[in-house]
Every structure is written in C-alpha cells, then in structure tokens.
Image (tube, rainbow, N blue to C red; front, side, top):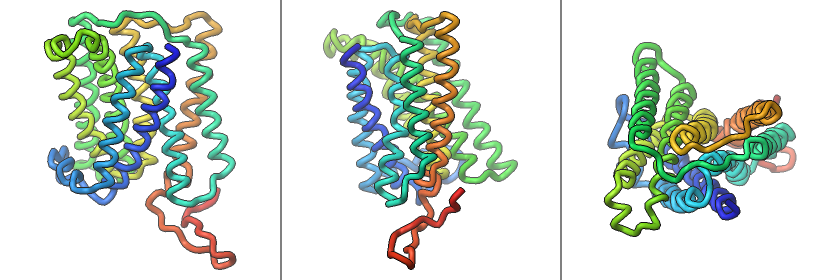
Amino acid sequence: MDKAIPLALLASLCTATSSVCQRLGARDSQPQGGLDVWLVFRLARKPIWLLGIASMILGFVFQVSALHYGALALVQPILALELLFVFGYMAFLTSRTVRHRDWLAAASMSAGLGLFLFAASPHGGRQHAPTSLWLLAGLLTLGVVLAGLAVATWRQRRAPQSPAQRAAILGATTGVAWGFVAAVIKEFSYHLNGGLSSIFSNWSAYVLLGAGAASLLLASHALAAGPLAASQPGFTILDPLAASLLGLFLFGEHFGATTVDLALEAMALALLVSGVSGLSHSQLIDGEDEPAVADERDGRVIPRVADN
C-alpha cells in the first residue's frame, strides 16, 4: 500500500495534464450530431490534444501500477486530486490572481480527501472478481452511461441546452464510465504477474480496450461541449465514487463502518464535494475562455470576469 499512494499521485498529475491539454485542443471543435465518432480523428490533428493523450497513457501506466499494490477504494479517491492539479495549471496558463476562496476550496477538497481515507481506511478484498459479478456490474454501468447519453441527446433536441449543461451531463456520464474502467484495470493488474499468456487469454485486456476507447470518446465530447468547469466535477467526483462502489461490490473491499467512521466519512464527503464545487467555479477554470485585458493603471493582465 505504501507504493500505491505515490503512484496514484503521479497518475493524478498525468490525468490533470491530459484534461487540460484535451480541453485546449477540443474547445474549438464541436461534435456533429449526437455521438460524433469522428470527433476523435479530427482532434488527433492537433498536437496539444495528442500531448493530452500521451499524458493519459502515462497516467494509465501509473494507475495500473497503483492498483496492483493498493485497493481500488484507496487509489481512485486519490485520483480526485486531479482537480487541484488542473487548478494549478489554469492559474499558470491564465496568469490570474488566485483568490482566497480558491485557496479555501482547495484546502476543503484536500482535507475532505484526507479525512475520508483516514476514516474509511480502505483495506482487504480479493484481487480477482467472479464473472457473474462482472456481468452485472457491466450491465449496470452500460445502463447508466446510455441513460446519460439519452438525456444529453434528448434535451439537446427537445430543449436546447447551454454548453455548460451538456458538458456537465456528459462529464458525469464519463465519470461513471471511468469508474468502471478503473475496476477493469484492477482486474487486469491481477493478471500481470502471469506474463503475456495470462494477460491476453483473459477477457479484462479486451474489455479494457473497448471500455477505454468508449470512455475516451465520451470524455472528448464532454470537453468539446462546454467549459472545463462544467465537465470537471463529474470527472472528479463520480469517477472515484463509482470505482469505490465497484470495489466494494466486485472485490469485497472494506470501509470503516462504525458510527464514528460513518460520521467522519459523511463529513469528509461534504468537504470534498464543496471543495470540488468551489474549485470548479473558480475564475481560473470557470472563466477559461474569457479574454484577459490589460489593467491601464499598471499594465497587469486581468480577466474579464465579475469579482464576487
């Protein structure tokens, strides 16, 4: 477990880099129709988007390694720190002042995550889940993803959505899909010790390729649909939440379940959600597409956003 935490932190840094690069590459590209399969091929012409994909692959390697050493319910919540890294990237890229409420939101998210891991103390569980449970988990995840796509598509046709609304729905759907992919990665990591024959004779490698490609397509649509502030909360909250639930269901992992533990876990989740919400609506992320203007008094660059 001591190896899982630093590996999960490295994975989180890589996924944050991937999110920012993919958003920079995708924000000027609009999907054509409901689910535009060719969107990924158009984005592949942009070097910044390809850099994001390379970072995502590196993050995947770190994630596989982390899940090989630690529980799914431990590793995935740490990956929620991705948003803090996104926050740092946007502060650097936009040259905007970090406000006190931004620091408070970052502190709230960090404290919530630390408290949750302390109170829940994810542990135990098996390395390999039964096929029957995998079938049920796969069907449930597919149902949730299809429902999310249906809502995004139906609302777009019947009642036009703002870019932020569509990005939020697709971001939440992508978060659930990523949680399932993380569970498949955990299963895949179990077979690494058996060599190539064990890896390619098991279903997890092929499901990982299919589910990973589908999740990449979903993420591309979420990032192209609207601002990062809208899609990032779904990525950040629902990914570890879905993965943790699957860790309990599939791998029999355990959380602290005393009255005190449950109270601390509820408090931690409240801190985490409030921190994610606050960071997502920071001027650094929410105003990513706002042009900056020069302050006539001293030449400083400030954003065209309202200061609350």
